Length: 337
Image (cartoon, rainbow, N blue to C red; front, side, top):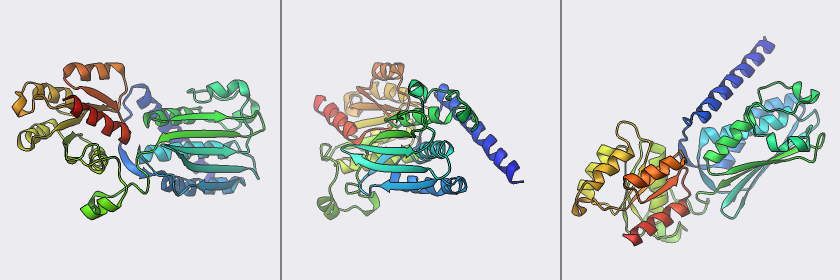
């Protein structure tokens, strides 16, 4: 029975990997970003892989810096990145070996490092580690099975989060080290939850730069988590934010609220951001027709950028957004206006 359950879990994992790769290839894999603490995700993932490591006799070590900070990311996908890296390390590490996970912050970047004392990777194969359906063609790796999709998925998910992943190994039998670099969104010290903030706390607590002080910014995104994320970032930069979920509500807010800047997601259902900006630009200036507008999208294709600029947006940023870049771009738009 245990063997049947194990095989069923393996088969389900393979199916999920294939589905994820299909979404990646077709550009349909979307993130649900939130401000999140990566350390807590790593700890939860370590708990989930610990039984497998213990059963195999592999020792797990974690070194997670409490000052690592927050990122803007999809919690489920970040956990998938960590799980794939840890599972791969455990899979290729023999009994009495060790897998170590390290989390630290270097400037505006967060580094997640997973190293092991496993079978290692030949130097000639290192450039192909993250390719789909590629595995080292040796008797030692063939013993472990799989389709060679996990690390390919890791690379795509990391890149969708605005980061990069690399691998290093001295050679066969010498272990391997994977390093993921992600942009830091807000540090632990800088983060002030909206429902707990006040004028006094705002004066006492460090925040993002106040470049947007007093600006009225209208945020349009159908995803609730993204609206909350943008509201936190922009509010901490001094802006007054109103976030809505549709183009129709955005037009209503434009009439009633008279915002200074429009920030809108491109890929919304029903009526997308292109249709929204077309209607906005058809208005006279006194009704918001010349409002500075910034487009956001999870798809970083050149045609998306060109189309956004052609229909009336002045700037385009890829998701997940970097808070510093977001505030700088908005401030620049307002100065140009």
